[in-house]
Image 1: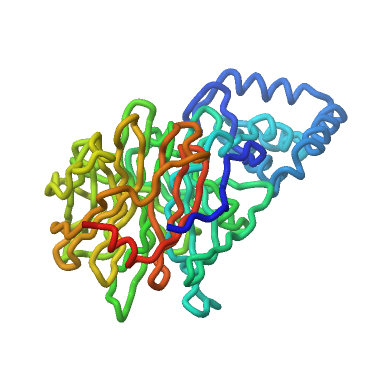
Image 2: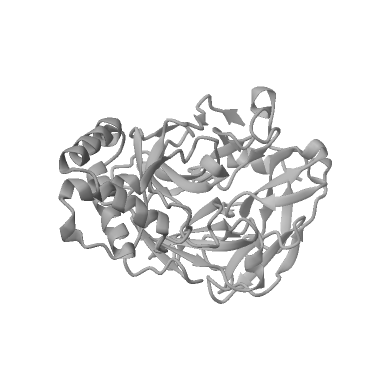
Length: 428
């Protein structure tokens, strides 16, 4: 296993402009405090309002993308919620009011971890086996709220890679106008048209997601055939409300427009579910941990409803995984079979990365598995927000190699590469 020196770290300097709610949670809930705040701003003279708005722009205009447009959009939202007469306020005062209902949020100040990686929808211009990729990461910010962020890059056949640069600002992915964020169903969101994916953040939107979107496991799913592929990018993640968890499904064709949908059925109550990249024997298939300790193979006729408890696939077998095992991303199809990365938890609650090989035609058959970890926390990588943890939510196949991004002690992200044959040879 070759370990790269590149590390992605938490960065409190990266902020995003977010709506600020004066003590209420629902985006459209009225508030006496909000009404009083608007009255206070309305009582300012036009000259004082202009001066205060100029002060806001000096402080924040260069720190964000289309700052004044965001203030204007926020005023429109507040005006709708509070029933304001827009004609009663000058444009400057409207934007000033909007600024009072916004705040900077440090979405990745605490941690950046648990990456997943898939081929980019746009593979134009790639040569010599290189693959353009999209990597998702779990960013943990103020209040320990988890959101989803992205990085784009290119991996070469030898496993080396480059990441596209990020801007100094980020933008929030916004709900579509028709989305109802207060009901227990799908919500539809979109990326700002002029913002790159690497500078976009998906924040919790619904009540079930309120305390975080955790550990997205992306997969490029083929609804078609090998000769006529029909790709959709899917991702399973955990929606955490603060008191309960639920598995949910991210769906997109272009990484510009997304659907966030609950996974229905009994299996949806669990964490750590990962889809196979195509149907298996005519059914959707998923790896899950239904009892918190062992791995199960689940199947379903529909992609968003998983009511079967599944069949036991793997139990902890070796000392480094005695406490529990779990999947670390979607299975990867190789000439040898389905390659499944796993994590094991052993003594002192140390998380290590392993793998298993499943039969290509019958993935309920485990052909081989790691006797020892293939990647474990050592030296400086042992320290972090949660020490002694190595964890990934997916790897990228390129030729006969893999690029494996991985979380380091719930604080940072590292990268490794190895050949598929070397991994297979390490299993028994």
